[in-house]
Length: 270
Image 1 (cartoon, rainbow, N blue to C red):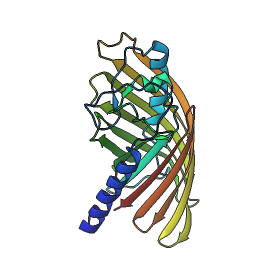
Image 2: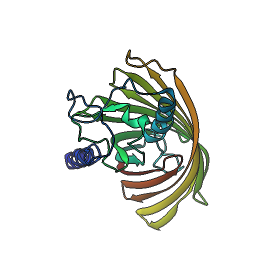
Image 3: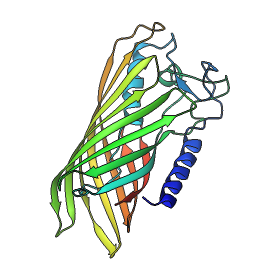
């Protein structure tokens, strides 16, 4: 990859992190304070109840879900895609499910300031065969105590090159790392379909839609609380569009679920 492209991607990721991981504003709730970290971080409070823990597990599964942000067509053998992305999900930070699972550097430092909770990240996809793609996802909040990594496998069920439509199935995993108080893993299965429209010889647009089911699994490992593990199953639907201009790939996706989310991606294919 050209040095200019690498510089652009690094700068864009830094911009996304500064905007998405920035917290501010104030809510009429009592915040739990721990100045150990400069940003809001995971730490379970003794007031966290089993009901709140279950709600956190269910909603965190949607917040951190590894979304497709691509159409259903396979990349093709030995083709690659490197992208930066941002997804954000609307949560109520004043509820105990979130207020009692996070600490803040001071009493005025809210989790989202009323804005959706978001995560920037990096993704990499590779075409292993003409039908099978694999991918990875990573993000880290260096000012806090957490990050996420993920992996995916996408298999092409139908790829009609004459009519330019496709269908695929996808398996994904996202895992939280860093916090000492808890483990969180999200497993997903997606079914999606798309159709490609060629605008110019070097430009196309591919709307897509699909449905997902997920399992969000949490485990607390701190003496501060005594909670049972939670395993929650949920369903969400998606609509999105992938625009390809030469080697550039731009995608936007909206997910409909208990808490809705919006995601964008900027990448390059080679």
